[in-house]
Image 1 (cartoon, rainbow, N blue to C red):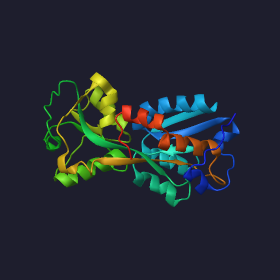
Image 2: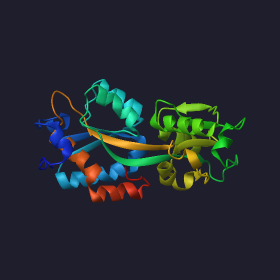
Image 3: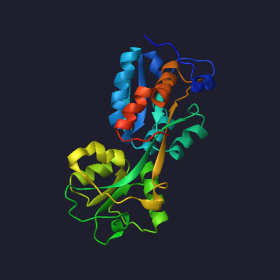
Image 4: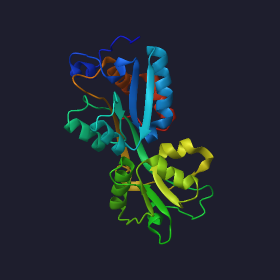
Length: 251
């Protein structure tokens, strides 16, 4: 059973409503940046309970998810970790107007106890330090590069990963002395990693990403469920509380 449509601005902009991939089998497929795994898992459960539909979640690097949508993957909604990555879908006419719903800032994660004694962003350029970052096409990688440029730090990572989850994984397993991830990832990891307390200082704006969410458009306007999920994530008070509890800022 599909829930009644909400009269949100996004739905009005979408025009006449028709079925999308999720409507065909009573399910909604949501692609989301890896850093959203925790809160979106909870939000999907809440949406399912309120709307009587199944929400299928697929998490990964934002750049990879965008490419999958461009190649025809049956996503109904996509949420990326920055606006630049989403713009590729906007330019191709594949999504309705994206709505900003959260912010996140990059931070330095180190193994428990910080054995390499990393105390600042500048320490990441230290010779011999095993640094892992996201590849620059990935939103967390782009933010890391902006911070490095702002601070005049030249980074030489031993590995560049396609998602922030992969960077965090290498820190957790001890394959890296430090990794640049999002502050929310460090919070979610609990005791598996430590955070370097040093602030990014004047580069904090460069290290902050705004997360947009959009309904995917295929063969006509986005479906009703997709629009309702976008509206729920972007505007529902309970959804904002879930995101805030995970450490995300309000866009």
